Amino acid sequence: MTPMKSGLYTVAKDFTSANGAAIESNVKAMVDAARATVDGKAIEDHIRGFVESSKVLMSALDEVAKIHPFIGSKCTQLHKSHLS
Image 1 (cartoon, rainbow, N blue to C red):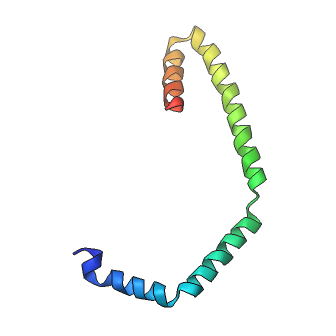
Image 2: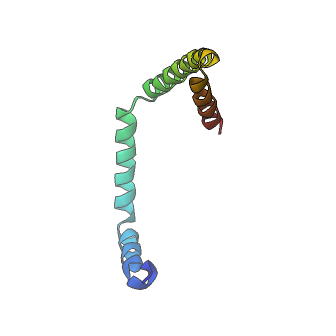
Image 3: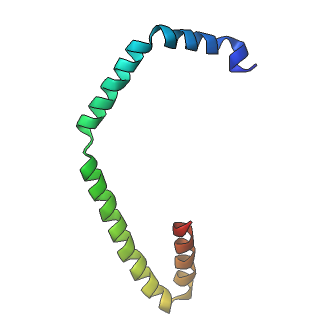
């Protein structure tokens, strides 16, 4: 049985219609609370740091790959997966 035929869709639609203002108000309050507690700049800085350290790691692995064939094949696979 599809949700449309089960009657659940109608119940959910009716509930949403009857409580739209309250739902919107609560969603806005949750968004405001999330914005107040989440430091976007800190997240951006952490991501930037991770990317920079990943570059250093990949460079080091590239150097190791030059002398060790197994590592070389794994680095090549990692580079390919990173680029796709």
